[in-house]
Length: 153
Image 1 (cartoon, one colour):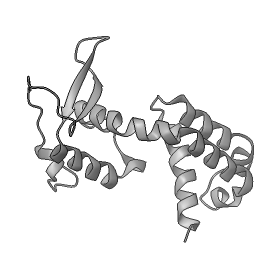
Image 2: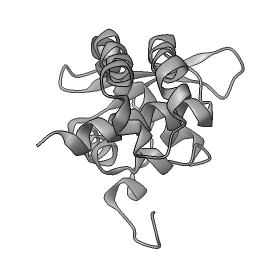
Image 3: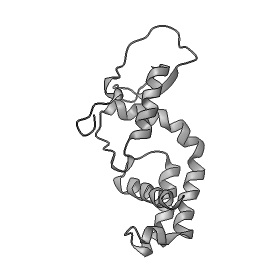
Image 4: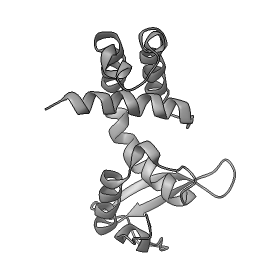
């Protein structure tokens, strides 16, 4: 639910299935409520479409990581293989943006010396790390990406 409006993702519920996993279903590897354990979640095609829509619609720059823990884990587990496939390319793109187009970030209010000396490396390192949830790093990464997409026709 966002802003008092209910979305289809709000009605998703986990169900226990003992049958074989269909090839149509996605299997996510998620943290368990048991410390140090993992659990598998089978995601049927209909629910997969709902998760995809949620990922496309979320306001990532202001996404609160205090959202329902299970939903956060599902969204991250679903998106991680896609991110892993493009992680190096994205890290390079963000770093190059700071080196080659620092004016884009200067105009967004970032400290010019920070943009030119540290920002690109911080963003690339955060992307390549593949984990963590520092609000400052999230802001660095998302603002570089936002600066890039606002200049692309």
